[in-house]
Image 1: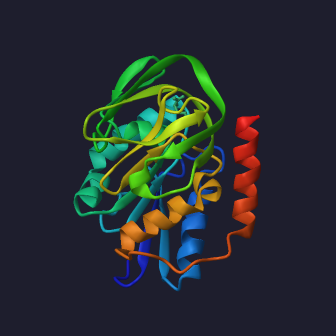
Image 2: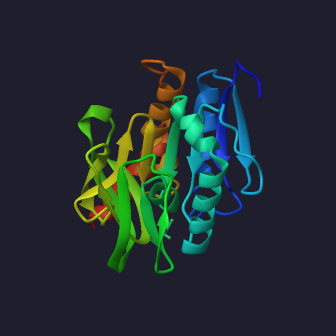
Length: 236
Ligand code: GLN
């Protein structure tokens, strides 16, 4: 890994990446490149050691079995824990979001998570499936969240994690709040992929990772059209 480039790791593509979550990596790299920020991307499979020295880590959603296996391997590996302790930024989606918490349920069994977000997940009575929309924590300065959700889990935040958004359509964590953030870790139930639906979150991650207060604007005409269409669909 070179020292100058922004290093982005896609965690365990062999286990977790539903509903186009891998698009988050493409969008993040593209939005960095548009600002002249050199980027190196790495896809680290679950049978490979996890580097601790990257700047941004992305993890996707998945089914219960691969989710439990991913959590076990990430706990044994320790690389993500070291990276977070060194100040890396993280975007975690759905199964990836749940496994960043203290515990989650997969196939009826309670599984330990990484404990890097102060939250735990249990199961809801029904699956949450459909469009998701929310008003984001004003401290993050982001426009409304848009996404697609499909999960059986329900997530409960402890005092050291903040809700990412207040739900205005869909279920999210529990029908009231959606996602969580703490430090430079951001978790959400939004697929879509999340960063195509919410380019402002991509820019937030880039600012967290580079320390920049602001980034040069880019042409978001198409992203805004997608957002307008999906946000309207969520309200229908
Ligand atoms: N297996 C988890 C659940 O159903 C996460 C699903 C997902 O990542 N889409 O709650």
